[in-house]
Image (cartoon, rainbow, N blue to C red; front, side, top):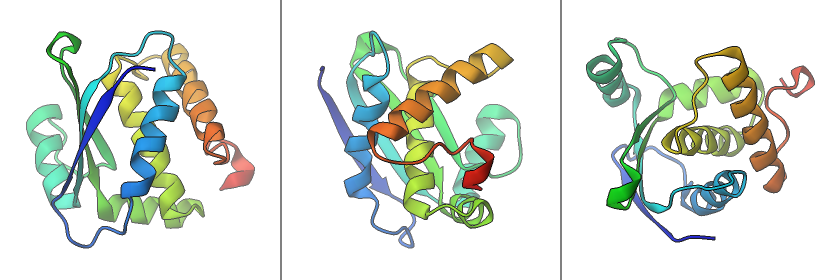
Length: 151
């Protein structure tokens, strides 16, 4: 396996302790890929207001979302940035009957896969990405979040 460095920025002080979840989730996501690109990863633990401003400025969607990924060119040694919105993640976890930790881990894996060039713009791409997420989560003993009996 290649090397990566993780920088964690806690912009919102209300975040629960998620630092121990981060490296294992990143490793699990990258282990599902044939040729992942390695490098520095920035994880930003933020809030709805900050993520809403990023979502508005970079995606023209003026609303908060759970996670945003900002990939970097692999040749410069950076994977990219993954930015999380605390309140949205907490609401979704509660509504879906998941633990905050499991939902955060799923979203981190999702974000890392985006940094690796995957997306879910087509049905086929979405199915591929979901399958990779499910396998990565299984490596961490986390149930398939897409099964209806888990919600």
